[in-house]
Amino acid sequence: MGHRPSEAPGCGGYAGAVRSWTHPVVPDLSAHGTGTPPRVFDSSRRALTVIEPDSGASSTSDSRFAAAESTGAGAGAGAAEAREVGLYVCGITPYDATHMGHAATYVTFDVLHRVLLDAGRQVHYVQNVTDVDDPLLERAKRDGIDWVALAQREIQLFRDDMEALAVIPPAQYLGVVESIESIAQGVLALLANGSAYEVAAPDALVDGAADIYLDLTSKPSFGSVSRFDRAEMLAVYADRGGDPERPGKRDALDPLLWRAARADEPSWAAPGLPDGRPGWHIECTCIAVDHLGTTFDVQGGGVDLVFPHHEMSAVQAEGLYGPGAFARVYVHQEMVGLDGEKMSKSKGNLVLVSKLRREGVDPMAVRLVLLDHHYRTPWSWTDESLAAAQQRLATWREGVEQVSTDQATRLLADLRALLADDLDTPAALAAVDACMLARDGDGTGAQQARDSVAALLGIAL
Image (tube, rainbow, N blue to C red; front, side, top):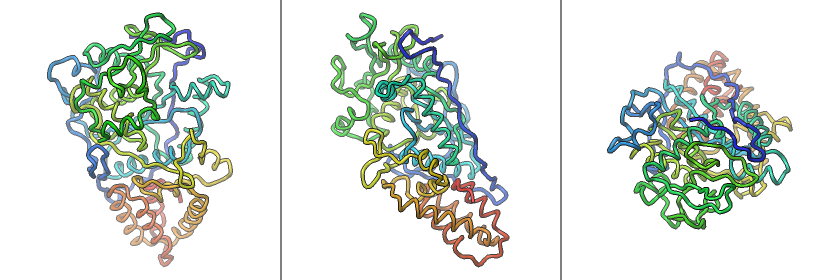
């Protein structure tokens, strides 16, 4: 199935291909044994779960919608042995610079990535970029800039920030625009099996064109990811990209799968669908499955994505591939605030990684601030926390020169144990503090200590 940009203003033939960033140096610690597969908090089970490759995970294939079209074929049908951990982390909508809430999320999953590698596991890491969506289009219109130029500028800034923070890049870093064909196929499959329906769109460019929504009434598992009740869902849905008041929907919570073309909006031609663009949630469903298979190990992101985004992504996958599709484990980074208030683009109270870098702040100090807070604990950024991190970094860089071999060996064992236990980064930093402040070694373990801190915490000494 081919696809092409429609002649909507601002589309300009944009193909949307994005690229990842440079891989940081990650020292190999295998000469000192291996770590333990980590256990992390699974939001869907509300329990700690060990991350191991799913031997029943299905591989990607050309017949991606076979489960949806068959009778009784579940997500594991045609499964292949999978000895790597499949990790999908939702990416940015590139309409503004990377703030500390973003950075905290990607550093958390970077630590998970590093701990898995140290445990001898291969990691297949996929991340998307929502390079066409309402917030991006609205910001471009507000600022009088082409939406493509805005997206490309902010994607590059994000790459620069991730590289500076020593975040291991995803194996596949994929834009929504370059994935339109796959997403359209998913929408068509949901229509074909009765999981989706049309809603009249009177303001569409083409008379009679309709928007397409998922029918949640046919999905009994809905709610199993977030564990939200209906009242909780409705309370946040509108603020998180939903349209509960949309006339013609069967249920207020039904998510948009495909938006028919409107005036002054980019759109794409997809055979079998009206010219248009995909909804937010179906994008991640299709991108994740395309590259990780119909079942994979970890879905990650900020805690504000639990509902509706991750809930909807999973239930759409069920509609396509049957029960048990999509992620086995859902892991979420808590919110980061400023002076006690949630940090967000809409509030305008952002501490930007790029701004700190321009001011000459060592990115390793920024990373230390992020690591000093457990991923399941909400916290607020302060200038004092950055100053403390800068001092801590200086102390480590001085103290590492005196670390003995025995001290380095103990430090590595401590880091492995603490990080395997629900990514306890604050305790891991405290263990490094104790080692670097001892100042009673002979320096024979300095390189091993540097390598351990770099490999597991991503901090270059």
